[in-house]
Every structure is written in structure tokens, then in C-alpha cells.
Length: 509
Image (tube, rainbow, N blue to C red; front, top):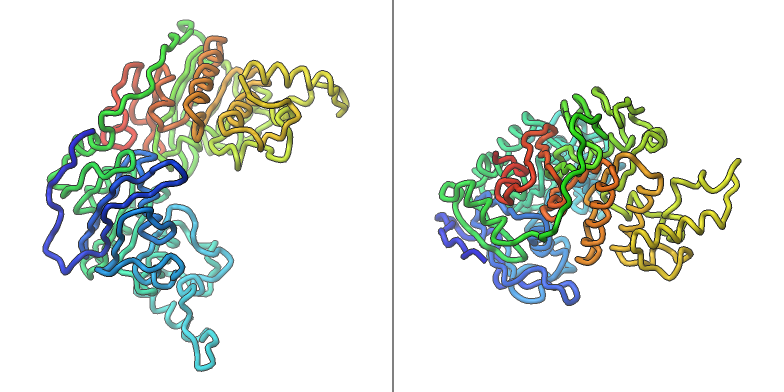
């Protein structure tokens, strides 16, 4: 492991907004944070960076009182952290503005601003007149032209973030954690957010800024803490920490899973198995050109919010692009229609198997064959014997460990559930296989099995698109296209280096 960067980050301040010393956090037998220490001076804007799984989210959960540490101490504004049950005390000391929606959508803007902090009258009842007046004053101070009576779900992403920051300040917090705040913002909105952050810093508000967009942290942050494998590996002033050293600290000396890969079975000048031409979706992706040959595995890599998942959803027919074309085997595909795209030759595995993949109350067999039931009979009647034979064959081919095809899929391990999802995508014998984070949340043995499945699909002449930012997943690819803020910015042939790939994914190219 690389040595910890010991450059001092302590400016002359009146103290620390947040401190963590000797923090250890375990979930069962797994130790996810190891002897973590961080000190954030009052008025600082500290970047917290690291690859997925580095421990950033767990540390934030400890700093906001969602979890308790197994060892170590957390202090806020110079005082020991409150007990986990004292939520009001936590809200007064620290607030986190998450990328995901954290407001109550069907309450008004004013009600969200003063949630759990409503002004009350003599009898302890909510003083709605004062709440509205104070809400109007807060919105005016933030130059936010919305009514306090507006339902919160009508706010734009930028407006929601402003309301959440304003709510934190109204509750008394002077330490605010921003978790991927710009992932869904356009550049002009990012600039406005940064202007507001700078203004709050000048008044003594402290920020911990979490972002995969590394070029942004050099705009807005003074200092940086880098995490890797549950540890703090660097702590420095950003002006003393150039981008190449930052990426090196994030990547470290870890070696990816090494695998023997079959060369792409690509026929020169053949019609691409999948071709995207000038594919465009507002607030998703812009003028994406991408080809995947039959027998080739191509990666589409990018950050959360980069547009990579939206591209995969467009190919699967889940969303309809605003412009551009999708072709399968040289033929135009009916975009925006899941069933038609499947019939045209698309097999798709979604990122989250629990939310968008599995039918948890159904059997393994029913999950494997859900998209091909028409093959087992006519006029809506299904031959159980034909379905069962297909299920047995799929279980054997995919290496699924299950008591039988009748076993509820919810009883299987995560790796076997994922193999079932891939098996379902392959059941229709697609021309193109689209896999989004295919080995996410599975063990090493299941990863190896899934990689072998990808290799066999490629060897069989399928065009395979792997959508991920996991370096281990991308190693199966013959080529990787990097998408950043909706546009493909780099292409890497086989043999790319981790450092260069991470830099491109993070926008440092």
C-alpha cells in the first residue's frame, strides 16, 4: 500500500467542524473501515474521494449518526457526537444533501424547509403563518423564485438541492456534506451551486464534498482526503496534490483479476451486431456513436450520472431517445419498445436485480423463462414439460446452484440470482447482450462464472456490451468506450492501464 500523504491541511481556524479518530466499522465479520482519521477545519471545503467500495459512504453514515462505530471517536464542532437516538442534536450539527431525493415530495417547500423544526405557538401547535413567512424569507435570501406553498415534487434538481442546504442551515447545522451534488446538474447550474458554496464558506459554513467528478473538486475544494479499501491513504491541500498523484492514490497498487481472454471473433468489414448513431436524450446523453461487432465485447464506462445506464436502457427499449438510431445486425430497431427490441435481438440485464430484475415471489424456473413463455405453447397455454426441460437446461448451462427449478429465487445466493438474470437474457438467443454492472454484489466464484458466460456468448457470435465503471468487469472487454457527461470522450483498446482508465472515467483526460 502506498504511504499516507502527510502534507498538512490545517489552516488557521477556530477549530474543527468534524473530527474522526481511530474509526473502525464492521458489518458482521467484514471490516469496512480501518483506523480512519479525518479532521475538517471550520470553513474548509474538503473533498472526499475514492473508488467505489473505498468506504466513503460508510464514513458519511458515521459522521451523520446513521451508524455507530465499533471503535474510535467522532467529534462535531469540538464536542463528542450525540447518541444515535438524539436525531435533533445530529441535525443541529451536521446535514447531508444526497444525490437521491431526500425531501417529502407531497409536502410543500415550506413544510420541507422546517421539517421537524416547525415554529410553534403558545399551545405547541404549528404556527403556519410564521412558517410561511420564514420560508419566504429563506427562499428570498437564496434568490429562489418559488412559492413556499409549492409541492416539493415540482422542484427541479437544482432547486431541491438549494432547499435541502437551506433546511440544514435553518436547523442550525454549520457542517454540510454534499454527496455527488452535481451528478444531475448542467454546467450553468453547477456554477451557481459553487457560487453559493463559496458564499457560505465565507460565512464560516464547512463542507465535505463527495464527487467522482475530480475536475470539479479543484474548482471548489481547498483540501482532499483520499480513501482506498476502507482506509485514509492521502490527506493534503489540493494545490499541493496534482491530478496524477490523486488518481494514483485512488487506484493504488491493487491488481485486477487476471484472466485469459479469448480474442474477439470479429469478421472484418462485417455489419455491426449493434450500432448507435448520434443517439441523443435530453439530460441523458448526446450524439453517442458506438458499434459492437458480432463476437466482440465492448465496455461502456462512466460515472454515475454520466449517461452510460441511460444508453443501456435506450438499447433495451426502456426509454426512447430524442434523436439518433439504433441498429441490430444492420437493421433499424424500434426504439422505445421493450418487447419489440427483445424480438429484434436484444438481451438485457439491469443494474439492480432486486428492483428491476427478479420476480422474488416466483421460482427459479419462472424467472429464467419469463421472457420466452410463448415458446412453450400456443394461444396462451403452456406445456409444463417443455418449460421444465428448458429450465433444467438453463440451470445446467448457467451453473446455477438450486435445489430445483421450483425453488423460490429469493432463496438463492446473490451470485446465483445474477446468473439466473443473465440466463433469462440469453433465453431468447439474442444477437446483442447488454449487461449493466453484471457482477455487482456477487462473490469471487460467481464473478468468474459470469465472466466465462460472457466469453462463451462472445465466442458464439453475440455482440456484448458491458456497462460499468468497475475495472474488474471491464477487463473482459476487447475495447472500452468512456462516456463523460453524456458524451463518449475516450476509447481504450485491450491492454489499457488502470491509471489511464480511471483518469478518463473521472474526467481527467
